[in-house]
Image: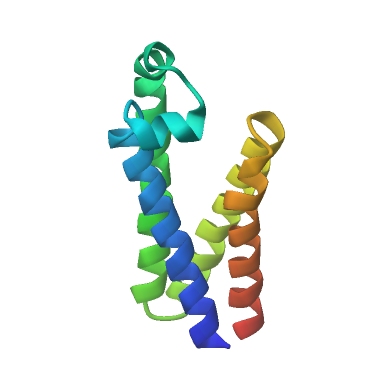
Length: 120
């Protein structure tokens, strides 16, 4: 169970690293515009906001990687903290911005958090 939990945490970390790249570097290009649905002008106007969001997603990814490499009990506690942050961010985004965020961010965060807690 611990291996499955670590794999899920790594996948959530990779997802947030991908979101960092998408929001910080690809926002005005096709992948970012496909995600946001913005035209070129709106993507350009919102790029600084997206980059800020991307940076926060990078912090989530870094925290999850830290949780994977740190010795217990620190690693376990760090994973629980950052997965809780992912879950809260996903719920908030899903209810205030776009319902897709519930599936793309909150669900993976919740499943990973459950796996980490059950593996303990």
